[in-house]
Length: 109
Image: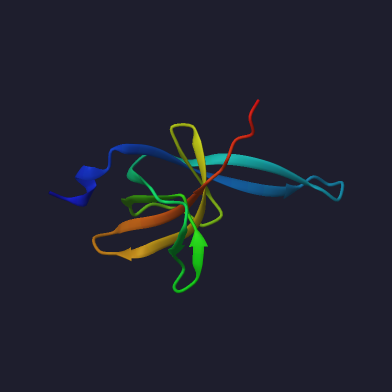
Protein backbone atom coordinates (compact mmCIF):
# COMPACT_ATOMS: atom_id res chain seq x y z
CA UNK A 1 0.00 0.00 0.00
CA UNK A 2 1.48 3.36 -1.01
CA UNK A 3 1.23 6.43 1.20
CA UNK A 4 -0.66 8.24 -1.56
CA UNK A 5 -3.51 5.72 -1.20
CA UNK A 6 -4.18 7.19 2.26
CA UNK A 7 -4.67 10.72 0.89
CA UNK A 8 -8.41 11.12 1.41
CA UNK A 9 -8.62 14.91 1.85
CA UNK A 10 -8.70 17.50 -0.90
CA UNK A 11 -7.05 20.85 -0.28
CA UNK A 12 -6.24 24.19 -1.87
CA UNK A 13 -3.03 26.20 -1.66
CA UNK A 14 -3.77 29.95 -1.55
CA UNK A 15 -1.11 32.62 -1.96
CA UNK A 16 -1.40 36.22 -0.78
CA UNK A 17 0.36 38.98 -2.71
CA UNK A 18 0.85 42.65 -1.90
CA UNK A 19 1.03 45.34 -4.58
CA UNK A 20 1.60 49.02 -4.05
CA UNK A 21 -1.56 51.07 -4.48
CA UNK A 22 0.25 54.30 -5.49
CA UNK A 23 -0.88 56.09 -2.33
CA UNK A 24 1.77 54.82 0.12
CA UNK A 25 -0.28 51.72 0.83
CA UNK A 26 -0.76 48.22 -0.45
CA UNK A 27 -3.51 46.16 -2.02
CA UNK A 28 -3.83 42.58 -0.82
CA UNK A 29 -4.96 39.91 -3.23
CA UNK A 30 -5.30 36.18 -2.76
CA UNK A 31 -4.97 33.64 -5.54
CA UNK A 32 -5.64 29.92 -5.45
CA UNK A 33 -2.29 28.54 -6.54
CA UNK A 34 -3.57 24.97 -6.82
CA UNK A 35 -6.85 23.23 -6.03
CA UNK A 36 -7.91 19.62 -5.71
CA UNK A 37 -4.61 18.52 -4.18
CA UNK A 38 -4.78 15.14 -2.44
CA UNK A 39 -3.53 14.80 1.11
CA UNK A 40 -4.20 13.40 4.56
CA UNK A 41 -5.06 15.92 7.28
CA UNK A 42 -4.27 14.74 10.79
CA UNK A 43 -5.37 16.51 13.95
CA UNK A 44 -2.67 17.17 16.52
CA UNK A 45 -3.08 17.81 20.22
CA UNK A 46 -2.51 21.54 19.90
CA UNK A 47 0.34 21.21 22.36
CA UNK A 48 4.00 21.84 21.67
CA UNK A 49 5.42 19.70 18.89
CA UNK A 50 8.94 19.47 17.54
CA UNK A 51 9.12 21.44 14.33
CA UNK A 52 11.71 23.47 12.50
CA UNK A 53 14.58 21.48 13.92
CA UNK A 54 14.69 21.87 17.69
CA UNK A 55 12.29 24.76 18.20
CA UNK A 56 9.02 23.81 19.89
CA UNK A 57 5.89 25.42 18.51
CA UNK A 58 2.18 24.86 18.85
CA UNK A 59 0.58 23.20 15.84
CA UNK A 60 -3.01 22.04 15.51
CA UNK A 61 -2.81 19.82 12.41
CA UNK A 62 -0.37 18.04 10.15
CA UNK A 63 -0.93 17.54 6.42
CA UNK A 64 0.75 14.78 4.44
CA UNK A 65 0.78 15.19 0.66
CA UNK A 66 2.79 14.67 -2.48
CA UNK A 67 5.35 17.21 -3.62
CA UNK A 68 3.54 20.42 -4.59
CA UNK A 69 4.36 24.09 -5.06
CA UNK A 70 3.90 25.60 -1.61
CA UNK A 71 5.63 28.16 0.63
CA UNK A 72 5.39 28.75 4.37
CA UNK A 73 3.66 32.09 3.68
CA UNK A 74 0.80 30.32 1.86
CA UNK A 75 -2.55 29.24 3.30
CA UNK A 76 -3.95 25.70 3.15
CA UNK A 77 -7.73 25.30 2.85
CA UNK A 78 -9.48 22.01 3.62
CA UNK A 79 -13.31 21.92 3.64
CA UNK A 80 -13.52 25.71 4.13
CA UNK A 81 -11.16 25.54 7.13
CA UNK A 82 -8.12 27.78 6.77
CA UNK A 83 -4.66 26.90 8.08
CA UNK A 84 -1.44 28.88 8.33
CA UNK A 85 1.67 26.91 7.48
CA UNK A 86 4.20 26.67 10.26
CA UNK A 87 6.77 24.38 8.66
CA UNK A 88 7.16 22.28 5.51
CA UNK A 89 9.23 19.11 5.78
CA UNK A 90 10.32 18.34 2.23
CA UNK A 91 12.67 15.58 3.36
CA UNK A 92 10.21 12.65 3.44
CA UNK A 93 11.13 9.80 1.14
CA UNK A 94 9.30 9.32 -2.11
CA UNK A 95 8.54 12.99 -2.84
CA UNK A 96 6.02 13.45 -0.04
CA UNK A 97 5.70 16.47 2.23
CA UNK A 98 4.75 16.79 5.87
CA UNK A 99 3.28 20.25 6.53
CA UNK A 100 2.72 21.49 10.09
CA UNK A 101 -0.34 23.73 10.32
CA UNK A 102 -2.06 26.13 12.70
CA UNK A 103 -5.82 26.42 12.18
CA UNK A 104 -7.18 29.94 11.92
CA UNK A 105 -10.01 30.51 14.33
CA UNK A 106 -13.06 32.16 12.85
CA UNK A 107 -14.75 34.89 14.81
CA UNK A 108 -18.30 34.04 15.80
CA UNK A 109 -20.85 35.94 13.72
